Length: 292
Image 1 (cartoon, helix red, strand yellow):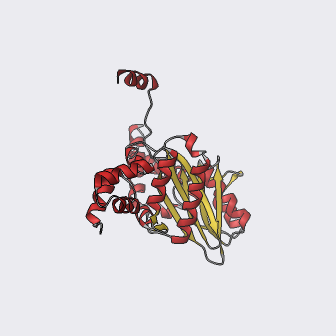
Image 2 (cartoon, helix red, strand yellow):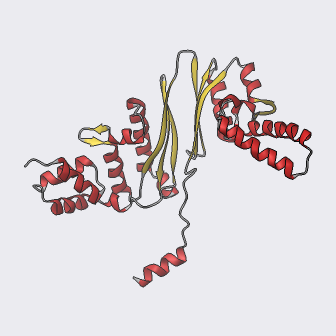
Image 3 (cartoon, one colour):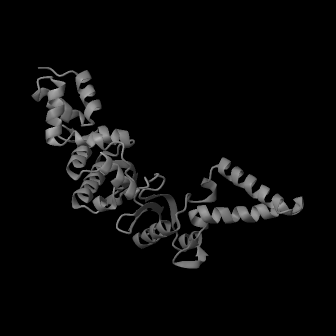
């Protein structure tokens, strides 16, 4: 029998399984949605939906370079234990290859694209969730392409805890990697002060001005103090203004100038940054289980 898109959507909402899994189950169940749910549960696919509300703040970041294209990505899991699981690391490798090949616009686009015959990337991740037993999610990625006179700087720290992908012009491979290592260590937000949004600078100026006034400084001194502290602000958040980690006596911009190189763009991902992790209270959890 013909399976309607509406029925597939309903089953997907009830189980969290992938579209193709839902369609196949409904076809096998002759359109009986309850029987299709049972089939998905039997295959382990429907288990993914029950994990949808869990917090996935562990996982891996990864950088992969393939010729003139490269990707940096973060895939999250619930526990560090799973992040070291071979099934999980293999999945991250598969996703990295897929993203370089497809270069999707965003995560939603990536998840909806065909990963294999009759299976989207979202389906593939749900399949892994069913096997591994934890919530897994593709959180973010960036695909970059380079020109002939450009180089990728790729660096992975702590087995995938932090990954950096930098795009440099006029740099050799060693210089590009050194810059990527610096970015991993110093966590800049922007390449140069010209890249900092005007509203962010103005907000910082307001804070610094109020700080100086609260210290009782006269108005004619406040402006000089604010400019000095603003320079410190730029040194903290701008890559080329930072002291170079391998030689703190010089700034990154001096290191780059000596190499006739410049940084066009960089992406730094750290596992779980910005995700509010659930605080586990195991004693309370055991008590709750005993009351059931």
